[in-house]
Image (cartoon, rainbow, N blue to C red; front, top):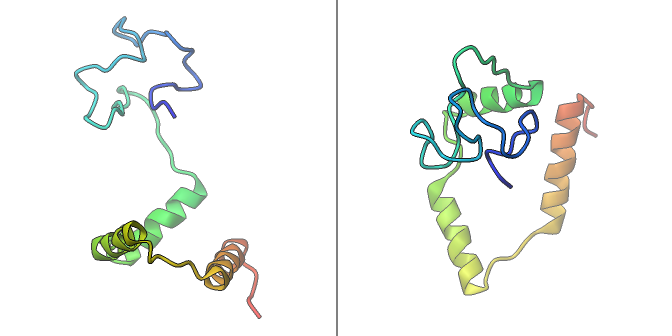
Amino acid sequence: MKINNLPDKPAGATTGAGKPADRLSASTSQAGTQMPEAGVTVSLSAVSQTITASVARAGGDVFNAKKVEAVKNAIANGTFSINAEAVADKLLANARDMLGVASK
């Protein structure tokens, strides 16, 4: 996925400064994303707002670095196992929450 390939700007389009939109500029961060130009309105979808609020309520931690490292090591060692029933239960619970359906 290309970060700078925006649907509202065709490939090879230029930015307001006359530079090609697909080239990195001085305002581009190391990750390759560009800062929005002045006057650009950015809004979050309802789902994004819900996720952002959930993360804020949980203390702001997006992930548990120790748990990620443990999973990474388990995968590397070949000892990582997936509990398909637990995954399915969580998916269904999340879908119920998002749809506002009461669980059984």
